[in-house]
Length: 544
Ligand SMILES: NC(=O)C1=CN([C@@H]2O[C@H](COP(=O)(O)OP(=O)(O)OC[C@H]3O[C@@H](n4cnc5c(N)ncnc54)[C@H](O)[C@@H]3O)[C@@H](O)[C@H]2O)[C@@H](O)CC1
Ligand SMILES: [K+]
Image (cartoon, rainbow, N blue to C red; front, side, top):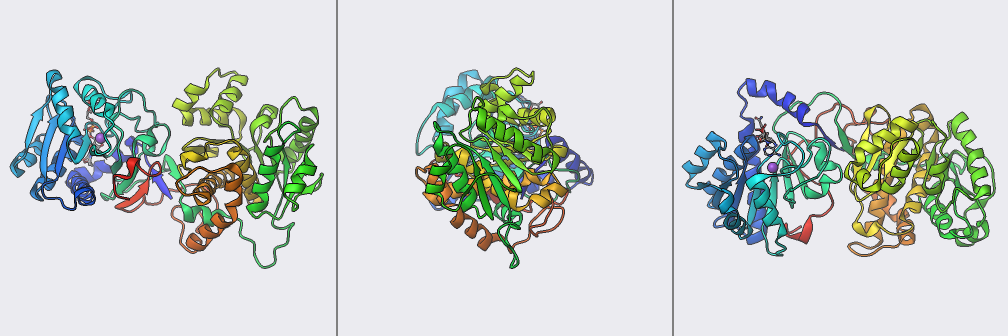
């Protein structure tokens, strides 16, 4: 699991070490130089003669860049620092100059020339602002320079390496307003920061490398991201004594004569995810059973529900079925996925074993209907804030679909999953996710009843499996929702085969499938480790 801590938590962890004279900046900048050296080797075969431009801001973030520049100069790189603030870190400047490189202060008249210089480099190191940044993007000379650089669309342009964070993102809230230089790689110190995992800023961070500088990070992490072995540990794997009822039955209320496909996709995903049985309730049972003969049409006992794919709230029959089924959800602790049309049928308050799966537009409608007028664009700009608001208002676990999928649960638990290729933004993909998550909730219904916060972890794991299934279905190319569903068995097998035996980091109760939920206050990822903050970076220029 990749865990992130806020800038205040990181600063608090740094303070005692700095008081003891621990050379944190040297550790950070040495590792940073190593990362840049790897980029240079990948790009041009060697470090010697590689051109590196440092964009240097007023604080310690610029200090990191300057010290890294000094290390790189000592290794034979051609390094120049462009200072976008009148003053830069004194020791860093001295180190760079002692290594034989210059610091050029850029003023307004020099912006065009500086941008051209940076554009011609092999690597641009963005050391303008780090965790000291006020959100809102870059302004002044820094903003003008970055705007010019960003406007260029040159395939052989420089690889941009962000120092700690892409400068100017909302480090703690993931906001990305104003001018920010999009990075191919972010080398971050001590621990990942929330803004590197959260949308919309996460897409500006590229590949993420977490460098361990020896911080002891206490308290609860801000945002977590599950990795394959975490999802494997959460997966409901049947034991030898399992039978179809003990493995879980999921009831799916989906589809209508006008939208039969959603019912087929949701039930198919549930079947292919390996649940014990799928019951279908709705008007297109003939079609569903024809496409998926494993599905049982009609009511009966279930352990979990999927409500809503392809359901119109005006459909009186489906509405009655869902309202009736909510009885079991509220009084027998049956977990449920509430998707699409069923979101409008949600009771005023529900327990956390109910998982809402809106996209940004549906979340905006849900919040507006509950007295918080907001539009889709605003939700997309601040998805975490709005997911949290929806959780507070409804009590439900909330999964917001997007390129990065967010899940918010009780006690501040929040996950940001970035597993899906952009190709997955396609009609029907949400129906597959709903069926898949329903199957997982049915398989672990008893555990969810014991600990409703498990629903959030399962929802994050479903997002991971969904994204990986899309990649499995057609690596690097277009996928259909049906192909994603069909790829589920292979994806789950790969996940369990590759990862099930590996220990899970950071879960409260170890690595078994009975693990309870939530990131704990265990150590951050040890590093340096490379993890994708937002899927593959652009253009493959890192030679991955
Ligand atoms: N404290 C330490 O010893 C360590 C700090 N490290 C580095 O230090 C960074 C934090 O350094 P600082 O606290 O100096 O802060 P920054 O270097 O992030 O920012 C410097 C200053 O810029 C100004 N500023 C903020 N937002 C602005 C905006 N939008 N436009 C213009 N100016 C703005 C503020 O006055 C801020 O204090 C980390 O991100 C990391 O890179 C690392 O070297 C690890 C160790
Ligand atoms: K930076």
